[in-house]
Length: 297
Ligand SMILES: *[C@@H]1O[C@H](CO)[C@@H](O)[C@H](O)[C@H]1NC(C)=O
Ligand SMILES: *[C@@H]1O[C@H](CO)[C@@H](O)[C@H](O)[C@H]1NC(C)=O
Ligand SMILES: *[C@@H]1O[C@H](CO)[C@@H](O)[C@H](O)[C@H]1NC(C)=O
Ligand SMILES: *[C@@H]1O[C@H](CO)[C@@H](O)[C@H](O)[C@H]1NC(C)=O
Image (spheres, rainbow, N blue to C red):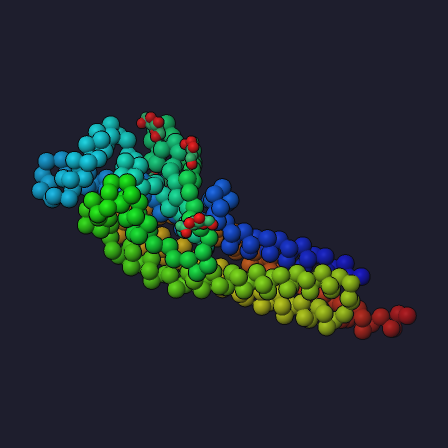
């Protein structure tokens, strides 16, 4: 029996579970919704369009929106209620996960005010899309579809009427290849971490330097893959949020990088590094122990 192997078994098991959660977070309603890679906040989309267009606007499309739904929106803006999204029939937020997206509303309200502080605002998910491997997050398409459903086909064009910046769409498209690679890397990482776990459990019962060495190598591989996956996921979250915040500011669209997701994935990575270090140690110390044993016998 090699009791020192129990330590990496614990680390690897934890890493396995966390990596699994990274992949499956948000894939069902109510399952770790806060662990999105990126959350798009559209609660105030078009706020300025409706706020400014009361009399000066000669734009037909905007006038027709106002005829349809704009009056109530303008009333609400005057009353200080900011949830334009809800009136347009779209959602307050769209959170991107590795295999799907979820959408819903902020409760009790989208913007903090004197009675509701930022920390009291929660996401209330109404729906999550189906899980899809190699999934593409395309907010422009999602929101346009919802607009078509709520106010009628083609009545409100997201880009032309609500000034949705194409730069956001292009910025997100640029990240899509990376997003697919991340998904594949998480799957490979789960495979390697699983193998590492089996090897570690077997090594509890097989004392030997060779098995420790094998563990070091597999753990290192798993660490590399989950590390690269975490790095790319972090880059996507940070870059995506910065693109959306840069171009979305004018139209009331913002984004938040998924800090909780990043913590989860980097802890999983760190645990694999620790496991490989423990094995490395075992390899050196254990080797010496076995070499010196005959002297004492
Ligand atoms: C703050 O927001 C909440 C939720 O939207 C709303 O019920 C409340 O009336 C607001 N308070 C003020 C002072 O505007
Ligand atoms: C959503 O975005 C609006 C406008 O960008 C901002 O005022 C509000 O605080 C954001 N809400 C949350 C919950 O992040
Ligand atoms: C959250 O959304 C559900 C519908 O999905 C709704 O029934 C519920 O009332 C909402 N909760 C709050 C606090 O608004
Ligand atoms: C999601 O899956 C369900 C059943 O698995 C199916 O009925 C539904 O059409 C799917 N929705 C989409 C948007 O593909």
